[in-house]
Length: 336
Image 1 (tube, rainbow, N blue to C red):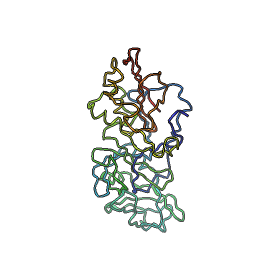
Image 2 (cartoon, one colour):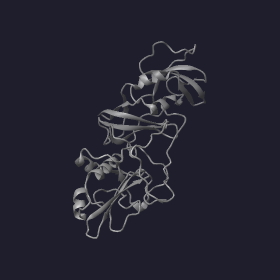
Image 3 (cartoon, rainbow, N blue to C red):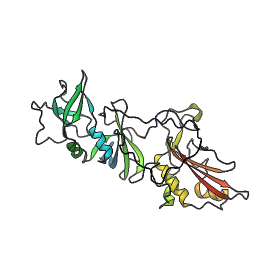
Image 4 (cartoon, rainbow, N blue to C red):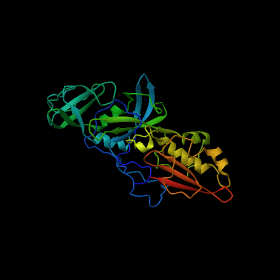
């Protein structure tokens, strides 16, 4: 196992909302056990190809408001959302009049004002199986495709209605305020693998900021002071902590990874002394409290090693010094 990499799932969300609980039956999770050994560093292409069929349980939403413990978002109705809408959903029979629901029956489901399609307030069996011409506000028509003593599994009769439903702002109760619970940031909404939890989580990535690994590796900084500040940002590590790393290990935030790349594309380090580099960028050992302040990839002896790692991916920059103590080369190594 590569140094500094945990086995198990890499969590992509940083703040759990006590919100949605309706998720696709087809569960999905990401196994990020890492490569067996760091045989050779690799660098992402400038524009890596996006998957043709994104995982159906991960959606993107833009934060529009945060007030009084409520987070308001607007979902992006993209391919990820289409896959989500095409999935089946499971609801408990003890809510909203679904107690006697049976396979093949059709119901208009009306949901509460908050938490999107989590809480069924009421439902009404349609004897003829035909959707009404006009639906009540916050309602969708569903067909029961499976049921047991406790749950009813449904699919939406008209996916276009689901788009209309989600084309409006949705509000979720949150347990605590997050750094990105402010307008201008996006969040990921990830459905849990146990089919009973849907977790919108604050990813802390400004709107328009590509996901780490999807950004142009050649991009230069348009706001160097901001990127210098962001690249040192950290958060608590979400993996089960290894006692060797102390009681509260931390790592880089997701939104620190791309700024670090832009900084090293922008600043001119060749010819600068160690002290000048540290004054410009910060000390690689003490400028943040990330546990990943050691090399992931092998670095030449005497190099300044800058590592920005969110526990799943990141960048390592080796600043090689010549015999005169000045930078002669900067190596960019992608961590995955």
